[in-house]
Image 1: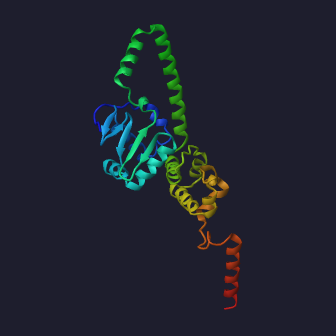
Image 2: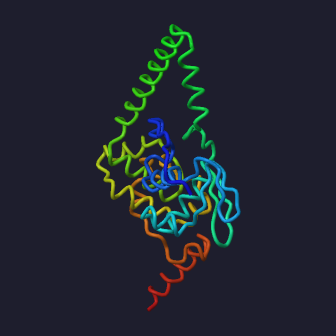
Length: 252
């Protein structure tokens, strides 16, 4: 495997759906750095450009991320189309999707350079101005959006996404609860409570920041405790058990 060369890392990565999850960002960039930048042979196998022969244990050692977290991160990256994984009982071959967008080969670099040098200067200036204006407008929107949510709200959102493997970005209800006296710790307790709730497990669509932190649900979700028989008996069954228990207490 080749360890030299370089890869491009765009500012656009700040808009990547996994950017706020440190392990996801770390692992994906590690794979980018370790992948072949040209085709090579490995134990009689053709390992193509943008591919890497590795394993979860190796990635864990190289990155300092636990093996279980490496497994979770790889599944997410595969699910969202960043890479594909072909595994055997001894190793895995990871293929980075659209690898050329992260590292151009020498011919492509020369071609881009020649095209730029021979292009029409006024048209180039106009394009640069347009691109700069677009980037500035986009950056302003992103900054405005970031300022909408406090650091605490963003941490709660990141905690929910980490627990559920989702990419929610709407933290409006979280921010409202924090503004009204709620705390980050309370919000995380709500997430943990509903992660154990059988109804939410069966209906994961309700495990979202709008439903979880709606004002009418906040105190109820925060203070509820899960009945030990929930998930074993139906709600009516639990009610019958509690009724029999109350009768027993009454006639003791």
